[in-house]
Length: 347
Image (cartoon, rainbow, N blue to C red; front, side, top):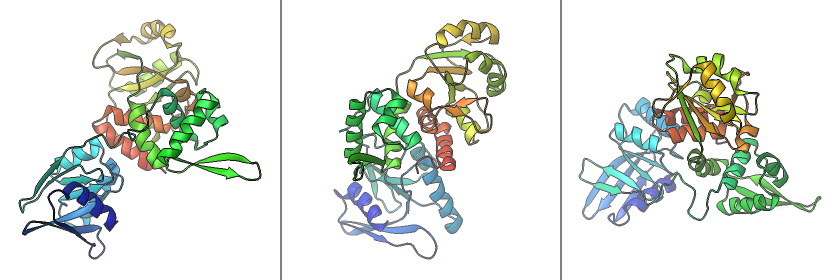
């Protein structure tokens, strides 16, 4: 851990610092001390390591620090920091550094460092492009952990040859690993870095182009109204699935209010839309929708399943729900972190 922290700090400070010394934690805490020498001055600050930098990682280390030390750390260091994590760090007036060299550190001793993110480190490396086919394969792989070409073809409908090329790209990124099954003389892949694949895939999936139908009706409890009045009109399971905040609430409750219900629908939804508006009293709107319907990919609907708490309601696969929460931003990022932690989505 000491080496990871030193690497991140040096990456961000190497053009101004003469030396960066990291001292190990004392007692039972996870708080490091960093001594940064710039010219004739030595700047001292506390450091906490927030692992991957997801919102729940940051929350965990900050709560742990407060519990053991009764004060706030000055600098949070992580592999990368999501927008939600950066928002929380900024609210508490803390500094931060990531392994890509981005930083915002302001110390009482006078050291001030601002390093812009040269790229969004939550995105996939520039060498890899998230095409719709690659996004579908990533979604299936994250949901089933089955890296066989034929299984992925059956879920996504992407051609065998294209899936093979996508998996080769995943191999190059370290997401999957190729091995030989000698007794069968064939290649077998395993999901090697689920965390890395989720990190790279989620922003691409959450920002996928989709058609939207935004409808509203004044309701205090949109999810309850959806369950009782709208769901019976949408068609059988496999033609629609809840996602975003509504799906997360059914799987890992976290939010206190749910102003909008997000739903994936199949290609037959436009034919049912008029009936839906007439029977449920829904009105199209451009803003303030209570019910937001999104066109779904075949892969997402095939991977959907009944919600554990309410089996009559299908929800999208959890990686997709997670990606959609991140894309919605704000407090939904915290809900995404809670979903990921409760369901162990990245492991």
